[in-house]
Image 1 (cartoon, rainbow over the protein chains, first blue to last red):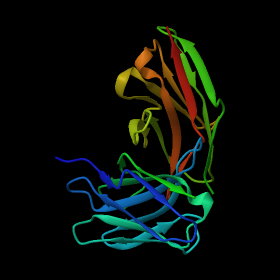
Image 2 (cartoon, each protein chain N blue to C red):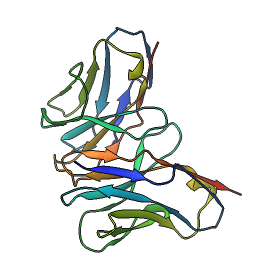
Image 3 (cartoon, chains in turn green, blue):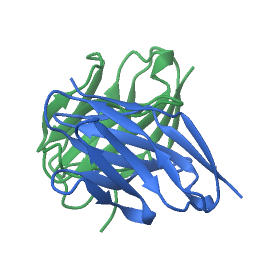
Length: 114
Length: 110
């Protein structure tokens, strides 16, 4: 059984560019949640995908968008990057879209915007 | 809306001493409560969770937490810490989405 994987590990982008981050969920899991963790802060919920549909969204602007594929892997897209988007982006998978289910986190993608 | 407050940003403690990391939450509805640990350059690992039932929850690595509904708290404890417990600890509350506290940096000194 493979765990949650994320790619790339690190990424450097310039302000105004667009970025795509990828996440492969744990085997058997149909739900993926994305979080942004700024330096020295706790993770902030961006959105969740359950069976390929958005199943909840945090307080993030529309330039943060996502996709979930039939194999339940997921992408996070961020357009018009801003300096404040620099953070660790965490993906977590779970079985089912219920809030009680344990989430398994990947190692994260460190995004730096210059 | 749900929110989480971790009362200590840093907790230094000597090896083999007991430790308590404090977490208060606010919510107008019943929620689920979690503690996660994050080691440097890694993702989050679940330590324990409270969904319902017994208010004393036991987790991995010798940690336990007690849910106190009247005080809206979910403090994490360990009777004897090791150097390897040095990490960032996050309390989280879940209803429609998961909300994390700002974290407590536990540093275990020899």
